[in-house]
Picture (cartoon, rainbow, N blue to C red):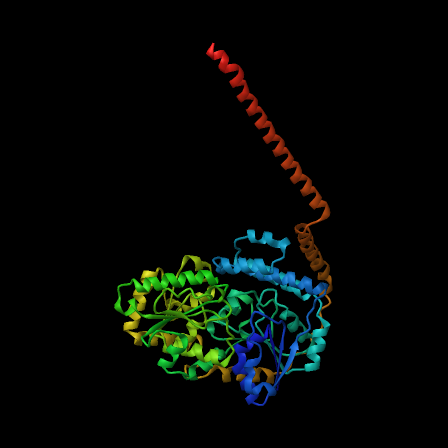
Length: 539
């Protein structure tokens, strides 16, 4: 079987390295192509390691940079923004603002005045926009690229990035008659980004919660959704600690081998780096002043997010005894040593604390109690994000979430006295969210089995572009003209620049004349009082 992975960037290898290894071990021909080069995320394909000679790296997928490519980008940006009209996303103000800033055309910023719409109306709008998407011509270089590769199965991830050009890959695969499956990379992909905008042949999700999200928010039929578990976490169930406690504490700079609490940083979207530093300092001060002997002098290790660590240099914890952060600089999360350090950090910790990060799931797999606390500065990226609610105990989650730091300190103190209760809670969460096919059943083989069964089904027939889509193209072009006009009105123009310049100078001149007149009248009145009125009064 020929399997083609199409990822938004090479950094997605960290989500699918175990799946690639499994396909190679089963004797399949595996190729990898990417849509974009992301210089901020330098994970790259180094993580292929020993199997790099058995995997074909095809490089970049052809990109439509012409007129229709630009129109498609704007249309997809509108689709991604319209999803936030759904009542379920009414509190997702941070995600909505990000989508508006990144991909919504300027001429359509007025859409932000609409707070929400009924779900049925949102669904209808999306259906109309999806029809307009079909009117955009298929990019022929992508068709040629896929025909040359001729895979039996194409696995695309994530497809839901803002205005993603991976839609073009799915459309080209339809023309070629190639099976397509969208594979969900992370726990927040279906609620924290855009929508799929096009219906693939199969959508592979982790669990039943994501299945409901795919049906309700992406309009995928239930029969086209497969639940396999989270294959990217399989390594955490078998990974072994690489350094003993004394060696690890010496490596990260902890003063001694006493118990320590680990704080794991979040991405820049969740918590801006300088705000996170201020929060961590406030949190450590609360531990030190708690009055609990177990927390008053407990050591603290902070691991900043690899792509959100600029405010951690120079050391902002230098004046706090027993508190250190590690690594000291930005790091590649795909590097074997960094992965080992991350695992050891959680393994040797007494508890893990974070704002909103997937490291909480990894800590739960290892069996450590996990905590978070609501903070005003992160309200939009905690309770305002749908995926955060998966962590709440009332939804089957395992993270103890406090409303205040004082409540958090009490929760932390109680859990450290009873770690067995925390392990039971984390096991229930992992069994439902990470490994729904059984706690002892790795997800990677289930993922590979699902893909093999899907590839064994009859291949879809090539689908030519429907003739009716040509009738929609004038409408799509009209919408694009509105967007271009909006951009033009925002840009400097010689005539508008000259008018604004004249208006500004006229206003400044008027203000200057008025100010001079007021001063002249004031001085004349003063002299009149001094030279005329005062002598008369004296006489």
